[in-house]
Length: 216
Image (cartoon, rainbow, N blue to C red; front, top):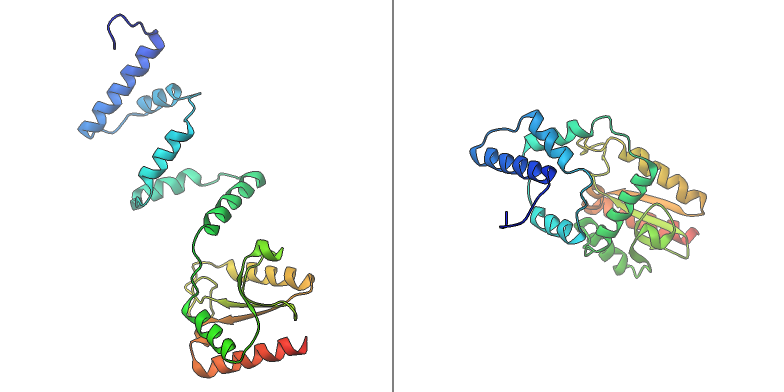
């Protein structure tokens, strides 16, 4: 406290609580429920500036949370209901973050691109859902025939042979996206990455793509 500077009783109480919390942290003593409540009441109505948020985000980037911290977060979020507005806001933020990432094709995609190029097949690679006006992105687009071709990863899309059960809802979501695209006049072809990695299956997939696009 500066000499001659006066603080209200409320400010002095907040400073005392903050000093007590800092002392406990240095000694490794866990905070009591009463102290946590005082800290929560003292922080009510406080607004964090954009600069402070950016600084906190930069310091937290790349930090790995311990299993105990993850368990605490999971328990805190249990039973919490998010509104549709909140979900849409999260979706927009995630889309903006992913749009800044550099696109790099996977090995199965590269094999399929090379084989189609060898046949002089005309296509467009890697189109996002927003550019198509559909809730589905595509790895290969045959615009003239209105065919969407996707290379599904075995892990993320729950392949029946190699899926780990981490995304049980993914097959249903993919099916709904296929139905939506079909309703708008598109035909969707999906191929598993493990099939493309086998030369014999890759030849059959290329023939299948050629036949479907020529029939349109």
